[in-house]
Every structure is written in structure tokens, then in C-alpha cells.
Amino acid sequence: MSSTTRSGPAISVAGLTKTYRARDREVRALDGVDFSVEPGTVLGLLGPNGAGKSTTVKILTTLSSADSGTATVAGYDVAREARDVRHAIGYVSQKPGFDPIGTGVENLVLAGRVYGMSARTARERAGELLERFGLADSGRRLARTWSGGMQRKLDVAMSLMHRPQVLFLDEPTTGLDPEARADMWAEIAHLAADDGLAVLLTTHYLEEADHLAQRLVIVDHGRVVVSGTPDALKRGLSGDAIAVELADCSEVERASGVLSGLARVRELTRDLDTLRARVDDGGAALLEVMAALDAADLRLSAATVSRPSLDDVYLRYAGRTFASAEAASVPGGRAREEVAA
Amino acid sequence: MTTALVHTRLLTERSLRTLARQPAYLAFTLIQPLVWLLLFGQLFRNVVELPGFGGENYLTYLTPGIAVMTAMFSAGWAGTGFIVAMDRGVMDRDLTSPVGRGALMASSLASQSVTIAIQTVIVMAVGVVAGARFDGGALGWTVVIVAAVLLGCVFAALSNAVALLVRQQEALIGISQFLTLPLTFLSSVMLAPALMPEWVATVARLNPVDWAAVASREALSASPDWSMVGGRLGLLLVLAVLMAALATRAFRAYQRST
Ligand SMILES: Nc1ncnc2c1ncn2[C@@H]1O[C@H](COP(=O)(O)OP(=O)(O)O)[C@@H](O)[C@H]1O
Ligand SMILES: [Mg+2]
Image (cartoon, rainbow over the protein chains, first blue to last red):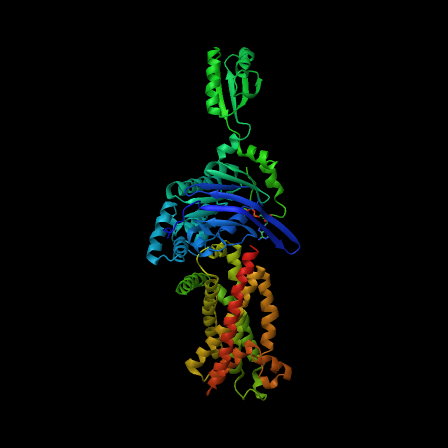
């Protein structure tokens, strides 16, 4: 089914805009969104509630249409070649897409058969996916009796039945408990790495985006505020934080003098026995710092490098902390199950 | 085309499976019509002595009408299926798959038709047990089922369209309250046209509920006028196809607002 691949990016989005008109008010859900996703990679579309993530996904999956801008998925134009797009994609929407009165097997088989799979092929593929997602024991039970984590995995499995090239996962772990979330992360990580899928994952969990996505697009108010690899985004801030703790606190003054002579070291601060600084490329910088201290015959009891978090990235580019954006989005938006950690 | 038929069949199977696992829903829309059948059958037992009923047993007159009325009541709730599918992500999943909107509509009407056929047989059987006598035989019963199914498709399509446009269960209650009751009273379901005020009789001739009731009673009579039966069924068929086509366009409204 995925034999007719066109070359180029799996998803390419340019200048998408969309305004929802509901009776008395207008909501500009997308205000010029651009990004692309390469095959075999996971792109994290990260943003607080109401940022426009689902709207983007709905346009790319042909469910909704943009007011302006263009988008291709698997090489097909979402507006003009919707039929081809539909064959090439799998879509897990934010809401559960399985039939609760059907069993796991029934849901999976139907999901495959609408793409033209024979009953037999669909049953085999269903068995394979149930096995892979650890659902084989429950396959013959009605899906409404399953746990939330299992149901979400069923949604993902259904979207994989026809072996799509591009997979859309709209907040796949929202509302799951930590254990089910970790479980889902492991499954998603496999999808791009082992199956060569292009995955567009939306999330409002910073940690999830950091963990799963090779590239991040951070959106807010329907605009891309910044994009890049998680590491590049964080490096793009003031750099990594390093801290060295001296074995002898009376040497702090002298150590500070040594470090301030190093070109990479910025924003050097000290308290009692510990020196802190901002550096580019923390790993290499730490080695340099340790070598310089060693050369000056200064002994350390501990040394750490820590990277800036995505929270720092969001603060820098969106001008507010992620948590405050989440809190601000509640009125007018959809009901929120929980607030991002 | 064949793909559309395959999709229709697959989705119809899904709906019927749900129905088979929750048969209580089938009974839910049967209660009111059966109460009507037995209550009015008793209350108006003597109405047949008035001219216009041909002196037959009133239950014989009333039962086919109640059967098609049941179809209309029941079909008015068809949109519930779409609302549930929209509230969950099922509709969105279907619309982003190769399944066409026509197949989504057709499968809803097909599973609704199965429900209606079963309900029609139940209403007719209850009528017979209560004392109705039909001369028409198997062919007559078949016509009643066909008429009920076609009328049901008209209202199921309407219900689905309202569901797609308004996305609220409450709106469907409006269909049953503000449409089906007046349409029943502005038809020959309960009363022979000869007993109706002139304007009611005129309106009744344009009322699809009346078409279904007239065709059903005629087909169950001892010597049916088949051209009249065929004409009414033809009208119902045309209307059902028209409504289904219009309702399918309502998917656009859903997709525009989603
Ligand atoms: N169907 C709709 N009708 C009207 N407004 C909508 C609709 N869907 C989303 N919106 C609005 O558009 C904005 C973006 O929503 P959405 O894309 O769902 O955000 P996210 O998925 O990032 O939480 C929000 O302000 C939301 O309220
Ligand atoms: Mg969303």
C-alpha cells in the first residue's frame, strides 16, 4: 500500500492559515505555519492548549481545510489530492477513534479492510499488531472494558493496520497515567526508528517532546515561535550550565581566577565551595575546565553539566513560561484533563 | 463504485453488530407506537362504523399506519449514531480514511433499515394478536416493510443531516417532537380521509407518511390496486434518495466547522 512513494519530505507545510467562525466570534487558529518532516523521523509539534496543534493535524489529514497556504503529505497536496493522502496516512485523533462496542480484533480488522485489505490479511495483521502492543490477551474483549492505556494503544494500532507512510498522533498520551505514558513512549520511539515512518506528534508535555522528537516545532497562538532539534534549541539559549565543587573551599577565589581566564566561560558565579558558569557545548567545556583546574593543582569533589530545559526555550521565544501559557489557555479552550508538569 | 459498496457493507456490519449487542435500543422506540396501537385500537374501536372505513375492523385499518409511523419515530433518532461518532474520534477517523461520505450515509441508512424492518414485523404481529385481520398475505407484508423502510430512510437521512449540522442530541428530539407528530395527524394513519376536514385531506396527499400508510393498507387489502401502491412507493423512493443525497452534503458543513 505504501509502494507509490514520492520523494522529498514526508510532510511539507507552507503558510497555513485558518480562522474558525462561530456565530459571534472569530478564532484565528493558524496564523502562518511552516515546517517540514523528513521520512523516518518524529517531529514534535509542541504548544500549550489552544496553540493550533490539532487544527494543523486536521488540515494535514484532510479532515479540515486551510484558508490559505499549501501542504503536502507523502508528496500529495492535501487540498487537491485528498484521496491519495488518505491512503498514505494513519491518524490518531485527540479523541478515541475505536468502537467501544467492538472487540480489539473487530476494530483492527475493520480499520484494515476499509483500505482494501482482505479479511484474512487484515486478521493476520491485527494479530501481529495486538502482539506487538502487548494486547494479544485482550483482543477478543470489547474495547470498552480495556484500560485507558490499552485503548490508546488500540487507537495507534488501528492507524498502523494499512502500513501508512506518515503517521499523525494528536496528543497520544494526554490523560494517561505515568506508567501507560512510558509504555506509549516506547512504542512511538519504535515507529520511526524501526518502521521508517514519518511521525507528526503533537503534545503539550515538554518532557514528551524532548524525549521522542528528533525535531521540534514550538507553536503558540497559531504561529511557529521556533523550530529545530531539541538540543539545538536548548543550545541556542545561553548554553549549558556547569558547576564544579572544590574539595577545599579556601581555594574558591583562586579557582575563580583560573576559570575566568577561559574564553568559553560566561556568567561565572560562586558560592561557598561551588563555581557555576554558562558555557557553549557543556561536555567539551567541562573537560577544559577540569584540565585547567588540574593544571593549577586545584582538586574537585564534584562536577556537573546540565542543559537548559525546553521550558527555558519556550520562555525565551514565546515570552512566557509554558506553565503560564497552559493556565491562560483554559477559558475558551477545551476542557483540560490536567496541567503539564 | 464497488469500493463504495464494500465500504457501505463493512460499516453497516459495524452498526448492526452494535445493535445486536445492545438490542434494548430496538425496544426503546417501539414502546410508544405499541401503546398507541393498543390504546387507540381500543378507544376508537367503533370509529369504523362511520363512513369511509369500509366497515372493517379498526385495528386492521390502524396497524399498518402505526407500523409506518413507528419507522418515522425510530428513524428520527438515526442521527444519534453520527453524534456519538463525532463526539468520539470515530467520525474523524472514518473521514480521513478512504471511506467516502456516501458510504457513511448509506451504511447508516442500511442499518437503520434493518432495525425498521424488524420493528415493522413486531408492530404488525402485535396488531394481529390484538385482532387485526390482513387479507394481503406475504406480498402485502412485504409492501408494508418496504414502505416503512423507505419512509424511515427519508427521516433517518434528515436526522443524520441535522446531526451533522448541529452536532447535538437535543436537536434530534426536535425532529420527533415538531415533525413526526404533526405529520402523523396530518395523514390517514389514524383517520380515513373521508372524515378529515378538506384542508387536512389535501395536506395528507403531500405527506410522505400518508404515502406509506396508503400503500401499506392497500397492499394488505383483499384486492389491492397495485398501480396505486407502486405510485406511492415510487414517490417514497424518490424522496428517500433525494434526502440521502442532500444529507450527504451536510458532511461538508461538519468538515468546515471542525
Ligand atoms: N471546531 C472549532 N470551532 C471553533 N474554534 C475552534 C475549533 N477547533 C479549534 N478551535 C479554536 O482554535 C484554536 C486552536 O485550537 P486547536 O488547534 O484545537 O489547539 P490545540 O490542539 O493546540 O490545543 C483554539 O483557540 C480553539 O478554541
Ligand atoms: Mg489539540
